[in-house]
Image 1 (cartoon, rainbow, N blue to C red):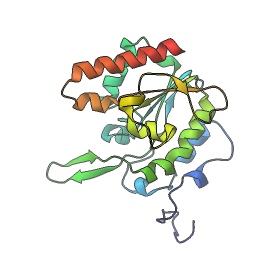
Image 2 (image 1 turned 135 degrees about the vertical axis):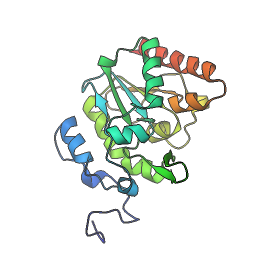
Image 3 (image 1 turned 180 degrees about the vertical axis):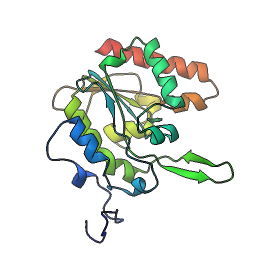
Image 4 (image 1 turned 90 degrees about the vertical axis):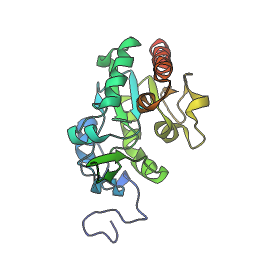
Length: 218
Ligand code: URA
């Protein structure tokens, strides 16, 4: 990588592509992703949080990026948003045995709140999201799900483009652009948005309803 002796990220080189293995399945990709330096987010994160779940799942969920707890444990959706998501999935009748869960961005982006000794989530930039997209596309190719549920704006923009708006585009299965194998995509709210909402019950009910639509579409 030009100009970076330690395979760090030069400003012009936001792209995970050089780190992807040329062959192999999910385990090979997970291993390679642990060494990804395709954008600067690896510098402060504990490690890469790759997707997990059934390698031949019919349903794939895509979140934004790992949170504080996910970063520490190396697994997606194990923190508060994950607990809410797993409850909603159960209420929607979705069997987690038939599920693969991942994020649009594989490293935790945060700012430090020194006064409180906490790491505060920061939304990944478009550039960071696009840099990480090759990992997401590889997961899509390898798992080849029937349906992808995008959770919130970052995941929606990663797969549906910059004009994606969760408010107007949610709840309806549609063809996933550029998918060769008929994969469809359905958007819904991010579970963290439910946790933050004033009308939490209503928003949670909307998430469960969208997940039921996803289950029915399989
Ligand atoms: N939020 C996400 O988008 N993904 C996680 O894994 C956790 C929280």
